[in-house]
Image 1 (spheres, rainbow, N blue to C red):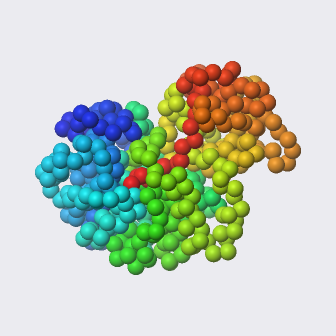
Image 2 (spheres, rainbow, N blue to C red; image 1 turned 30 degrees about the horizontal axis):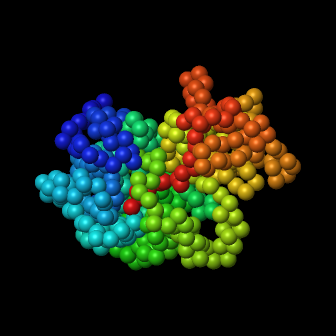
Image 3 (cartoon, rainbow, N blue to C red; image 1 turned 180 degrees about the vertical axis):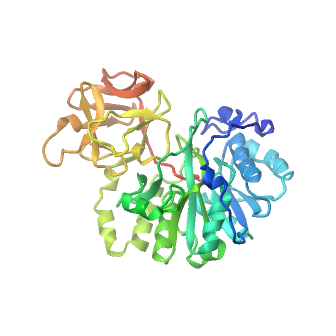
Length: 451
């Protein structure tokens, strides 16, 4: 296992949306690649790539680690350029110091916007300046590994209508510990147009023939994806009418499938992705994500949009359930989410098992399918089948106190607290108090760069 240290990537004043101090620690390269992937031979002439990285107030060391991981791992003959798009960052270290640093890097261009574009506008600006055969859109908080680029280019070389993504491993925003994915997953979305991960169905696995075969996916995350440049323009690129960030990966996924293309996740391509525990900037409009969803529904869903509108979106708090005291998110570990399992705390990620929503029936629904509800067994919070619609089930009703951050169990009037239980952190009912471990936030699930 190799340790690579880029000591010059540290800068004393950084945005703290992620742990800037931890991001400057030595990088431990995880042992993640299958041997058969590393020995893969690519016979056809591979296209060149333009890697487009948009950022807004990104931490210095996190941004520089992303850039250098691309430069250090992508074959020189395949990497046409790295294009950085500064989306009106306000942090001082991203001004003159960044310009001077980038000027010393071969093949790296810095474009600065004089107005706020958001992730959609920033990526469109970068794409307009790109000259590579393939566009690789990448968040500004990633860690690329040897062999990540070639599989993406190879699949596109075989069919220019393929849009492909690497497997996105999780980097803990607090410690920068790397958690690599083991079981193959694919991206899906529900009728609320929320993105989730789910295990690859058995019928798909039978068609693969190998653990490292490409995985067809209904949707792709936006963190890292590759698309042939002319095909991207031919299908209309990203929708410029969408604002800032949110749902653009869903819009592009639907667009590709309906325009005769396909989406794949490639197990032989691995990229670590830092999932922010909060958005590192203020949105110009609280309804931005909802407006983007409505635009997608009106544009692409045709008569099916009625199902989308049946959801009482205003009644929902949606996202990861983040605990202030621990810095972790509510999660469950059972692969299929069996009812009766305890809710635990894990590093925040884009895992569908961390998706939660609070609705007008005072349920906290949990998991990618939303079929499980927070329930209580001997004062421990567990997941159970949701039953409130069938009969009153007060054990599954909660009061979310947004001002204090507390979540109270209506039946017992006690609050959810993060408590150490053996080797893990669990959720238990305790008398309500202002302690940090009883403070929770529903945070919009971030699966890509916030622009």
